[in-house]
Image (cartoon, rainbow, N blue to C red):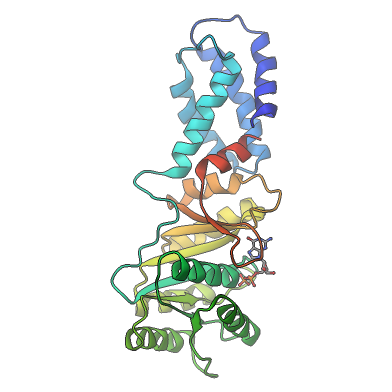
Length: 298
Ligand code: GDP
């Protein structure tokens, strides 16, 4: 799985004297290669630096067993640390807080990130796997097509959507969704907020107002996993202004290396909960840290 990096590190270590434990110099030399691998996988520079620093302490002095080369040993330490960091502690992948019905889930993100698709995918999952009754509502009042798209997806996955009433504000719709969810005995209601092509104050103010009238149990940021550094910038902004409880990385069926996952975790401290793997409604998986770690190391 890590042939590229292992090969590179193998070359580096061939020039070093074999010892029973990794020396500081061995580790420094090897981690230079690891840093290049992280940057190639689109991990942002400050995050790569911080991560390397953390690994350095762990790797120096580590015993090298006979069955592996020093290079493989470093790769293993880096891999395990990546998994550890991506997984966080006390988190079960794919778990959402949806107790105390009706539990609101706020979906946020930029336009085109896959937010509406992910809302429907998650609603389907909550319905089919967790046996929840889910209501979805689109708050994208400026884009009637987006509202209709959610209704169409709802029909496709067998999840109810809040009827569209023209002329309402996002806050009006959020209140109506809450009321309907309460009266209709729904377990969960999902709010698909409007997206914009870039972050602007109006978008954030709108999402804040919706958050304040619903007090979401989960606020999930949907980001395009292929956008690398931009995705990290987006996460930073949404987390600072709205406060997110998790991330869904979409388009991980593409050939992106997934470095954004590590950066996002570092920047927001929030877990990546799900990964989007295609356009179909079942193309959503809980996040597997070891898969992303493998991709990052290449
Ligand atoms: P929104 O503007 O953020 O609501 O984005 P949409 O949900 O409308 O998605 C934009 C496009 O991305 C649609 O064509 C989706 O089918 C597609 N899409 C969403 N998630 C994924 C994914 O995980 N993989 C791929 N390949 N396409 C996706």
